Length: 598
Image 1 (cartoon, one colour):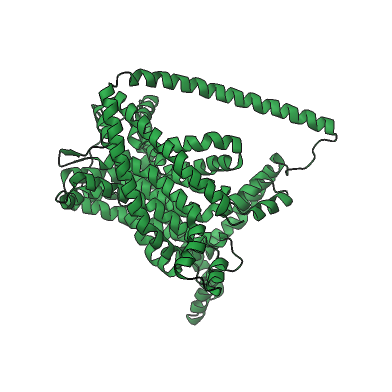
Image 2 (tube, helix red, strand yellow):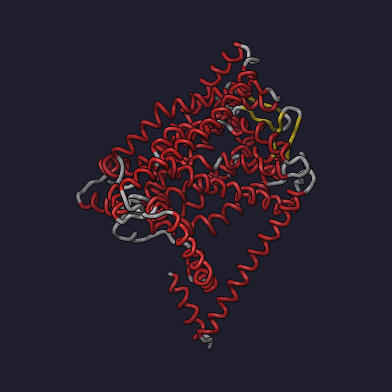
């Protein structure tokens, strides 16, 4: 297609009397105009954001509901999302690689990741916001960093689980080939680990952005006791419009958000999905692979080709040489005698042990200090409150199970249908992105009007809101799993007449099982997090709540009741970690043992 885009302008140019050089100059002019416009808008946004960050600390700003303010607010929110995603992607690659390749580190990192994903956003708020505001008391940098970190917490965990599990279930023959070729660690990471996880990483990145949009309102406008913090952005705009019950402003805000989602899907996610198709583990190419006009234009761009040839390739070669010198191939003898090698190994072992002991000692002291301060707070929680929190946790757990069950029932068949059909993928991917990214909290006033008349009232509405915030984790992972099924397996099943339920049982479900487990474990944590904003709702100046642990944590955070906030957070974290260890971790090991492409 890229070659066609290069040839077609020449054919059109020949019909209109234009030479090939004229067409080439026109393509260069097009690239300069588009690239210059993009750089100008990016620089303008960065300048405005920098002036906002460097301005004197303004905890509360006046949010305008004027349509003219929406472009600037959308730019601010988009920049925060981009920075948070960059941080989440870096965290994913580093954390997931270490956890998947180092069994000793895995014993600590994976339970820690379970704990991190179980802590709700509102429990991060007091420590993160107050610490960063105190670190930058003269500017808005602390507030902006707090918002970015809170968005990061809604993006990082599912991406990390996806990358970790992709590396954990690598085909053994590919691992053996890398070992025989004596690839250096950085080469193995790029050529095997990252390549094998690209499809799942792309779809989980889309899910992370949807999760970031979902919690955007909570990360740009929040209250801690008698203190309020507010940042200009699309989330604050939607929150103010929902609180005031302004349908015009709410509609304009949602349309702006949908426009951003469609723009990102067209210019970023669809090209990435089409590009990731090259990393499928199969011997023959897809008959109708995913297509992206933007990707074709990028591949045919003479400006990008020139930059890649004169800037990208030399920089990459220099970096590859540096990494090659820093990381010799595994197994190469670097010392002349066995005695010297043994001495070197003993020295390195002592250095590693010393560094490990030093780090663990520092972390232990930090943990002791945190536990001491936390214990002092927990002493102020009466036994009756603990009993209420335990019962509330049971109510939230039942809602979580209901949301997961309903979400799984429809996401598996729909996700498989989208993933196995490029035609449906092209049609439904933008729609799924839009629906998954619309903050359900912005639509909650409308949903409440419809649901309050039904049996269960707010309790049923809370399940629906939790479902809207968590079902997409399962759907996106199932789509990624279905797209990663080698075409050879599907054709072999068709050749042997394996159809219907037998095809699902022997081919599709085993192939998507690792992705489904990743989706369920992140959806479970997301459901507990979503309970914070679904069990206690404020709009039109009224506060509606239902009995549950999420409502207890939200009420404690709003009132500045830090002992109850800590108690509820620890209880929620303990329940999520316990479920992960007893249920989801065993399913992970089952996927690693039985459902991998050996």
